[in-house]
Length: 316
Image (cartoon, rainbow, N blue to C red):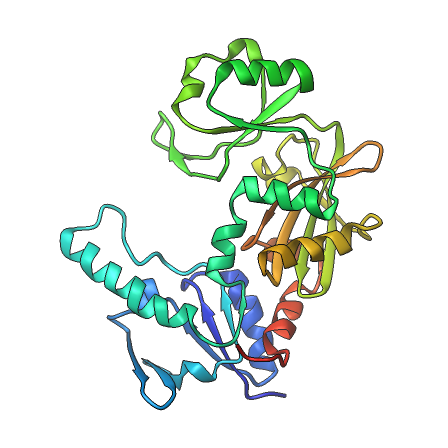
């Protein structure tokens, strides 16, 4: 049992965080759940003193704590400080909250899983591809461009090819319904000058038999094979089947080396498993979802996250 203080930054409906909080509570940890973008200032007060030593006091309806004493912070999915289409006053107050309260939170001298600055750096696909090659992952031939001629030349050399967004960005379709952009096979003959409007990512199509979702928590590696028959398994979860498997030789060590490159303690890796057994690196989400995998397979990921948050370590 422990009386360690753990700060969980996420929104109220985050069921994945609930799984971790359950393990923390069972071990006697003092858990403070705080969604600064939603809770402050209406449901929380924050004061910080920088005199003899820093003191960061957070007062909510159920807690009054010095966050400087936190052993760890679990950064999940907090609400943005600024709403969509903010008014002038909302822009001012939201910006002050982000720089004031947010600035205090990111400066806490403890372990972050993961630190938002590390997440921000690790979310960018070009950096992911460079780091993946540096640690020895096989990576599909990739082109990022807004030049249609370069796409056609790339397809001629590395085709067949697929398109995928550099970041998942929800949008509203012509029918008014929310939609998403999935990995899609590309016919170069159908491309036109609309490619020039922004940056796009194209990759050679991997002749895969399945996908691997590899969730890394500290030094623990959970490898799940996903069979679907889909080019992008996220498109239809009802068609997925899961099998917990041992990671291919060398993959676990490379995952750990990759996380170290970005200063991460957690990562959700996606690999396309070629029919010859080679796992091709697709991406690593530094704040990826995993709750549904634990529900489907029983892999003890939530317990591993709680272990990592409670682990004793040198404070910053």
